Length: 262
Image (cartoon, rainbow, N blue to C red; front, side):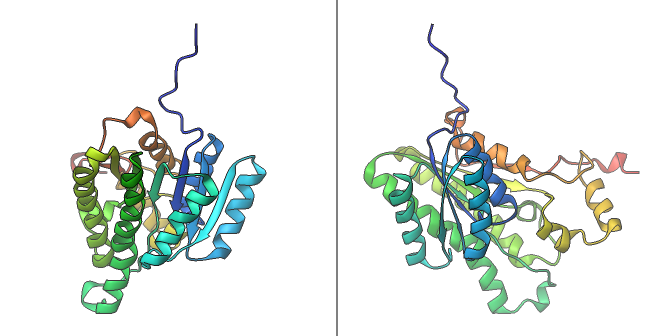
């Protein structure tokens, strides 16, 4: 009797992870490589990429790197081309890149607002469409996994630029899913809540008191781990999610009813 095919496998898939040199992106890349995927990690900073790539290779994984400013359409096209050259193709694009800063809306300059929207929203559009053009031309299909945020679902004081961009990513996800479904391209989105990374800790819960408030804002009363974002990405890249497209999945520890807040 032959072994059953594993619908959750990502072995052999060629995967791009933007923002793959730090935080959640680095963990996503490691989790895919550990399961036999061929991974290309991209970042604006080459210095961020080398340590992650070295760790993946030391663990026996296959990884390539590319420097890319996702606001630059030509740089994005070059990143996609590198994936085809170095990995032999592209099956999954994970748009994990992002940037933000805290500032009240009335103090955000037009340039500051435009910069955050360009990195988060425009960058996601440029990466997704560059990959889709290749897939449509070849008739192969593919997967796009976009990264939104709890701020894009609920809003976030001090992050009007970031929240608006991340909300736009959710709408973009639905639109691209509708346009590309007939080409076999599935487009989904993850909206993380508070996740434990050095960058998030310094920016969002810099003191024990604030950290406690953040923890108690979730139903599970804790901050999530980067692996808990990477694992849903594995599912969205695998055959197991083949009837799922156009969706935003909140990974946020669950809501907490005000009736039970102590």
